[in-house]
Length: 280
Length: 321
Image (cartoon, rainbow over all chains, first blue to last red; front, top):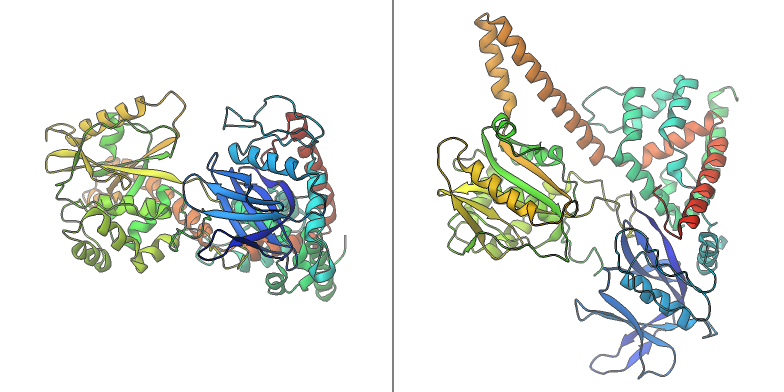
């Protein structure tokens, strides 16, 4: 499947045009702009830092949009403009210091031109125009240092700290790497007695009776792998508190992958104790 | 530009013969869709009776197709515009079905065809797209959308959108029905003898493919054909009662091959429609009960580290996971 992940993030609020005028009024709500790549599509997401909710999710096609400073406005106001429509989205920088404004804006525009843009961080970064849209651009080496995925994850953690008292941990693992066909085969081989407990979760309209072969087939299928990725992604938003309750887990389990897996282990230990099963 | 706004509730579906064939079953139409791997005479002959060819390709927005054939604004057959992108597969199927003479179908489709009679392509497209029962039939074959991910508006990982173009015979000409073009496109006429319209269609499609640089076009071909299963079964019964063992045996092989394909389709559709979150959770709990979750986590962490390291050395692009 295609790449997904957060390319960059910075503190920004939204601003809205006053009806019938050319004035743009900033909304005081604390927020963040995130650029994300999902399935080869670039998304510009605006997240409310108080509620931790995504309130805007825009899909951006290469070279369709630009992010430019609004010169007529005082202060650090920027506009996302589309060539394919009249849409305008206004934002204002919320970081106390404006020292990195240019850096972020240049990289945003770099990604807007080419989702495979190599972000460059450092005082003199410029957007790189890539000639190729297929695959990563290997144009000139970036000036300054590159933000590693860990650094981006830390930044995201900073931005998402708030409600519920827990910042979601940077994700160090993916559920798809846990629910691998190999791990499942080993599991079914060593614990065949646990297999029937999985049958109630299989599609009710399967054209054949449930079995471990069917389970394996499902687990290796693109549809299942896609469902795991979706769930993984959803967990990372930290917003699945409601959903995980339906699975018999505490709300805290919906705040990230690690909390989810810890809660699953506790749930398994409880059930195992009730079943009187052997530990190994 | 946000994905949800212009979908009108139509979800993006996989463009798989099994998905199309299930839609046809829902519409009460005794046809199926099969993959076509070649346009040679043998391949096409084995799929007869063949009603339409569907050409699907990844929409390459930077290059525009050079037009062959001519617009026919007076086309008397069925042609609807594609007004919602996600509905593209179903619009293509409806455009094909609308031009098959004496088509057997369920009452809803028949009514839709009658109701849209004499409408212009744009209006037809709008009416078809606002058909609730059709949209539900279409959506029933993609993963349950916002059920488990309510309100998160996460982009769903589905296949890229393909564009669909139908080629079929009508009034002695081969027509191209492309929901994104203003009118039906008329290509040449054909002789009823031999391969009939298929030889003309082959020519048109091969010319089209040739206009792209080699390897630049990601495409597939599908065939809309009569469902062979009832015919094969009836034929087999006849041969068996007539005691023609050898011929019956041959037919059994054909029948088994067709049946196993349909079983595979049914299986895939069943897992397509299913909400797998319960299974994901149950598998993780099972791993945990077996004491295997911790080691799996540790392993997953090192796999992720390796992946990141590999990506960094490649210059920033994340590998497939």
